[in-house]
Amino acid sequence: MTNRTAESKKGRQQRTQNLLDEITESQRLNLVGLEFLRGILEDNSERVYHGVVERPNSNLIVRGELANYCIPLEPIIQSFSNPFAVNSPEGLPPVEVHPLGKWVRNHAPACIQPLDHSEIPGTDSLGILVVGLLSDSDLFTDPAQTSFRNAILSTYGKIQSPISNLYSDFLQKQYGATIDYVAGEISIKGTHGFTWYLGGLNDPDVSSYSLSSSVRTGSRRIHTEDTFHCMADCKRLRYLLPLLSKAPRIFLEQEDDDLAESEEILSSVAEHWAPLRRAIESGEIDLQ
Image 1 (tube, rainbow, N blue to C red):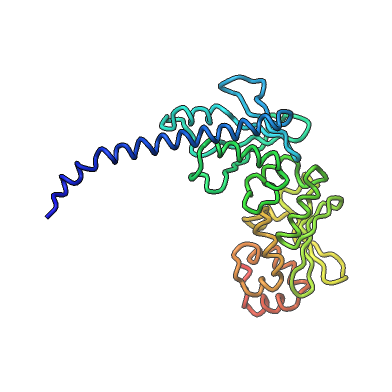
Image 2: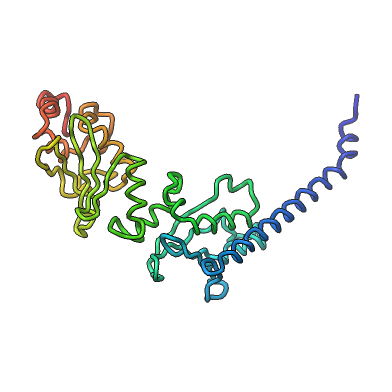
């Protein structure tokens, strides 16, 4: 029988060398990534550069097509210097998002991580982030980049702005919805001839959205002045638009426990849609 301890000792030196080789390869790949980053900086020197503030508050500035960005450098440098340090971050730090043409104190943060981030050298990750911000129109329309898109929308709001056309296209492709910047509302086709309108985009007194509907060519009916007061998930379009595209049918199915159980909204819709009114009157749907 082979002596496992002897075999283990026999391969010890090779295993140690393999470990050192892997560390060396990791450093080599980071140096290759550094040259990739250097090339990006040199090719885009007017749009990517180190800010005027020095360490520890320094930033890499990226001037995109939609907004301007600050990448905090201190946590990145710390992670490159010593990834085991207590304050060393996991992944890339949040990027500061500022509107075109000015820096603002209350900027929005965006968490952006390259796909398969854990499989590539850190310097490559930073380079990929910079390239993404330079082409921020593509980043904005990427369905996976919710944090970035929310930060841009927080920066400009849902009004006419540098992102208006992009956001309009995104809503149409992603949800089949239409945004009217003049009226300040988003519309989407539902079931049974309904069209739903999420309004109040330009009204500072509306915390979330107003909700109204029309049937075919009929008149508009308001169901709530502000979803903030009658449902929990009152503002997230990723929730509201897919559900409204199935409404009012979904009100009868009772498969949703927020929009489809809002007493204010159901009561209002029932005034104009007989199937829902009958379901409530028969007790099939309990508004309580």
